[in-house]
Amino acid sequence: MTDSTAWTRLPDLASRRVGGSVVWANDELFAERENLIRAAEPVFQPSTFGHKGQIYDGWETRRRRDAGVDQAVVRLGLPGVVRGVVVDTAFFTGNYPPFCSIEACAVEGHPSPEELVGAEWAELVPRSPLAGDTKNPFAVTDPRRFTHVRLTIQPDGGVARLRVHGEPVADPRFLDLASLDLAALENGATISDCSNMFYSSPANLISPGLAAVMGEGWETARRRDDGNDWVSVRLAGPGVVRLAELDTSHFKGNAPGWASLSDVSGAPLLDRVRLQPDTRHRFLVAGSREVSEVRLDIYPDGGMARLRLRGALTPAGRAAFVLRWFNLLPATQAHAVLRTAGVSDVDARALVGSRPVDSLPPFGV
Image (cartoon, rainbow, N blue to C red; front, top):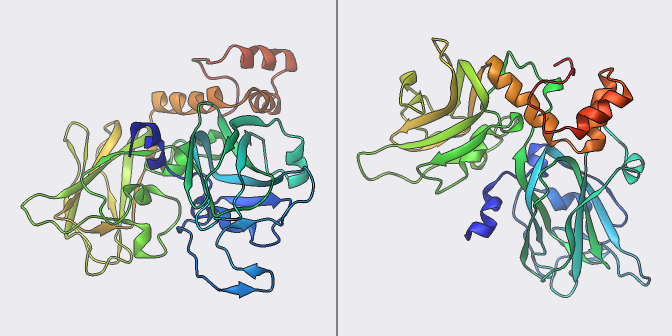
């Protein structure tokens, strides 16, 4: 993988697995829009026909006989900063769209498809050519936080998957910053490094919800030396960890035998403890030391479903967490946030125009 596509290692903000949804499409006659955000890679079985023709694992519209375009709107399961988009036309060969474009918007609440039409849409990817049966990557440079994306295909055809890779940015108004999972992807934590990801991505460790199967966790290759495997997590913000959950659910003959937690200096947070297969282990973490990154060591290798590190952001961590969110909001949403918090229209416009700010505005968070 080249540096120009390194962003494809970032989480897919649109995936159904993290709560994404295709809220609208103007046409889906041949294949359903919901396929666009399935976590699994697309598959194809030749000569499998339904009442509307060959069955495709993707979104496919009818052939247009006018000058229009087809569109689908996706609500991101994890609102955040989009760093790149992959428009995957796998198995669409004579029926893929020759061009596409992608826009994004940021809105408050839970808008309907009709309400989203009037949103302020920003161009992430201009009209660009697509190749058939190909993962078409497009880097994105817009640094703002978005909640929805809109895929436009020109003029019609089929797309197997839409991957929206980026960095989640949580809304602090809906979190208790004194008691949250500091290692949660949805709260802004990221994987900074790991020793091995032969079978599956370490990002699965910090993904939302419980793992449904073994493949939704992190698993390393079998070691044939005296070392051990590890993964480092950059927390959502500097904080104090009070409780650790090491979940080996679904890992039965391949769970690690032991595990430990430490900070970036190597100082222990949780001494080496024994693990059981297929078990959610909970451990109290003693002390009140501030940490911003935590390393999980597993001994000697194996798989783990989830890592949860529950605790509180420090005052400095809380301020940084809130300011990052506010400074990344598009202007229209930032203005709406301030008005909802009781800030006058004049003051709200002035504050939005002065961003990035380095002191907390009056949000009530």
